[in-house]
View 1 (spheres, rainbow, N blue to C red):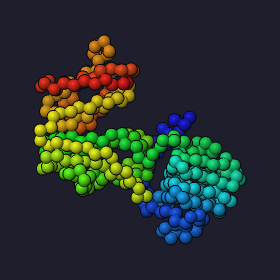
View 2: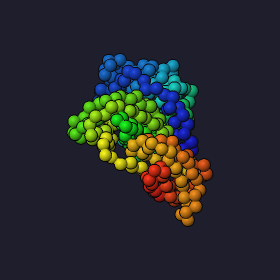
View 3: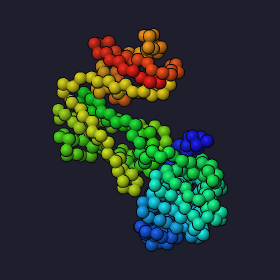
View 4: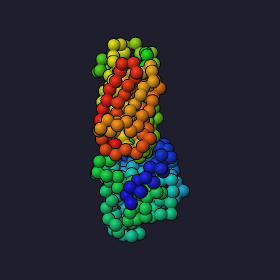
Length: 330
């Protein structure tokens, strides 16, 4: 059932736009209904992204009626339900980060409701993160779907660069995004001093693969370094590993990586100027699938016509002398 809830949650989150403005709890332990608890000097209202930072606690000690208000609540510290309850509208979402908790004094009247569904009752005790609750998750005591101990705000699936004449294609993808705001494409010509050359809006909240791309045009340096800086809605950030491009004298490199029974991934370090033949071979050398790519560059998702399971050999041939192969697990 947990997987079922996460699949439903992903559908909802793909359509959930990051709210603005962000309102953050600043009191060490403050009441939700107190203006002094929040950095904006007011209580949360419809359209807000509400952040309870690590080390901070917000207490709901009276009835908070936001039943007609869309709220994205991100709990990094503690949310305590003590003598009150909170109603949110059906489009709202609550994320509890790893190490964060929702607690109560233990009464069934202490509740969290999203739409018409009760997601939490005080009698069920502590809910620890990482976990998510929204319109797609179940009713209390299963109103929060666990995301797994390894859940991170943003999980990068890949980051690669590819040369196309005097341009560089920068590709990256994510497997999960929670509360992400934007990505900065950063470039350096010495590997030490970095300049942001583009800002790309993030998906915000997603549990499916998101793909991003940016083209750095008319690059004049011989060697260029790239990295991606990901910024969260509450000002946290992460930086990827560095990728390097040689604009002159570089040779074609093709990376092949496993995917699913229906596809796998390839990355071409520069644009191929011909049609590329990709074959999938069984261990005994039998061709079980074949496809052609027209002048591929950068990240490519290659569909497999037949569902495969096990280890196979993928060969790549540009019919002009370049050939490579790699084992792939389906």
